Image 1 (tube, one colour):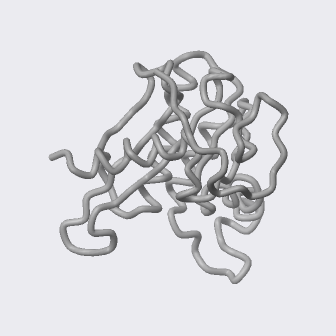
Image 2 (cartoon, one colour; image 1 turned 120 degrees about the vertical axis):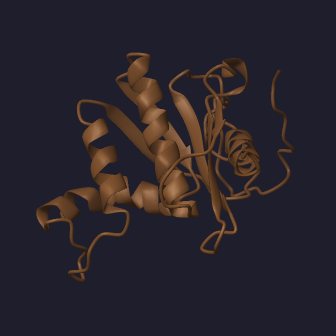
Length: 178
């Protein structure tokens, strides 16, 4: 099974080198350490909210792809952080010490790339001296990724990147599970 997309849609002007999709991300499946993650939440922020996670390692890795619910706070952000945590658990279980992650969640990409170090220095306070939202999830993710080479990359939501679209589908499917 392979994913196809229309290269004329959503041209962001990025050049490709042949091993990349039109959007600058590697074709999924070209690197077994490339993964797309997504969290979704039906009725986000309301009574009866139900979150789901989607993890897509690519069409050639169906056994590793995940569509599942999770326990805890049921929001889009929590779901995305849970997807990241579950993906790191998977990578460690497969003895992977390097993983390239794509997500459309900027809290994760900026949090892990820019803010975690500053938060730790500030006693898990933001630059405005407020408590870090989702602190426990970020502490867990930070600890889990010690001694790993994890590259956190942002991909625009709804950009039709195959891997991101598949992770979105898996996460939304999970929100319908009981």
